[in-house]
Length: 90
Image (cartoon, rainbow, N blue to C red; front, side):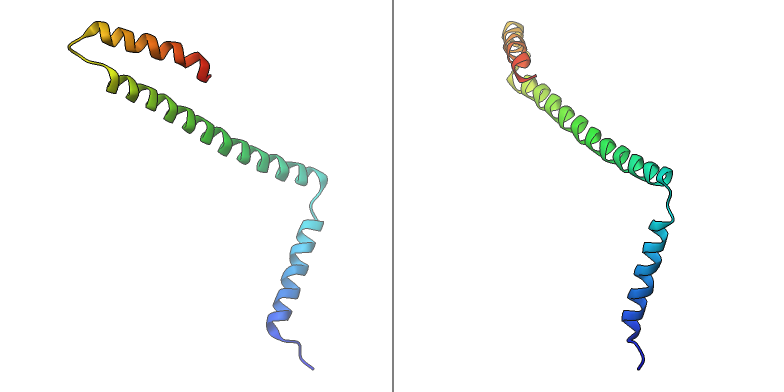
């Protein structure tokens, strides 16, 4: 009785994968885990920096929208108001 070929390929593939992971030393596992954590932290840092940049861009856009170039004292008042709100958001 011949075994079905797709089951045979799955069996050999899983056995090969298990043999590969079994052959890794503790140093290899430490390296793989370190690389994985480095990639995860890199992605999280990128996302956090992008979010902070979006917040800064929104603040600058709000300043631009609220200011009046013909009235410098109103512009100074808007900047002072935004300066008061900024520490609360941090």
